[in-house]
Length: 245
Image 1 (cartoon, rainbow, N blue to C red):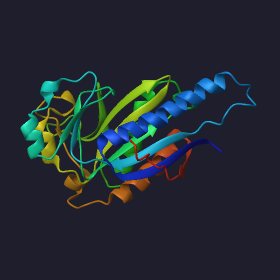
Image 2 (cartoon, rainbow, N blue to C red):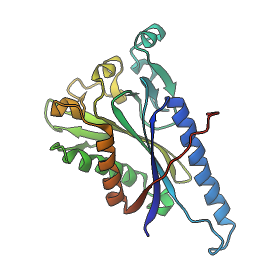
Image 3 (cartoon, one colour):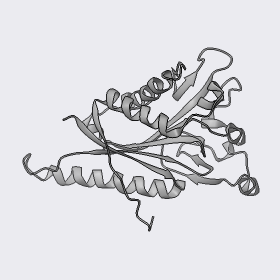
């Protein structure tokens, strides 16, 4: 058996609640690592990892290196668009999450895979690239920028998936946000990911294909490609989010 990754679809969930749940799972993996260091090889707990899927109500999140002025809405504007704003601990600048977007949070111990954050991000991007290829889209990377893009090198380069991570003791949290049926107008209220180049926009699967795409269908493809790219065994497991979160 390969590396074990439990995955679950949390459905629609508020950003803060999902972040708190991620943090709980993230800390549980770190705690297990600490315990295992004090045990013999025979006594150690077997490692396993998580991949959470969800969909958030409208929210703008600002990474620790981001600029608040990249949010172009004031408090009244946020209320008008039924959106919230959260400062978080991932890398990167500002981004948007909302309905019709498939968000994935891998919570993995990279010591069990490879201790290389750049490689990890490339692998996450590769999962998305392989997924959208099944819809006839060529996903690419842009040097110096994270995420997955279309038509790189043209005047119409556009981002279809954002990637942002937080790492501690080689355990990861946060992840990727793939625009599937996303209302792209919400990106007009930020400088997406801090990129001010007018020739770099955003897009979605629905926008490119001219049709709505079921999130469950995309999720199934991501699970399959995640297993391939990371050489892992992905097993569905119902994960209960505590009511107090």
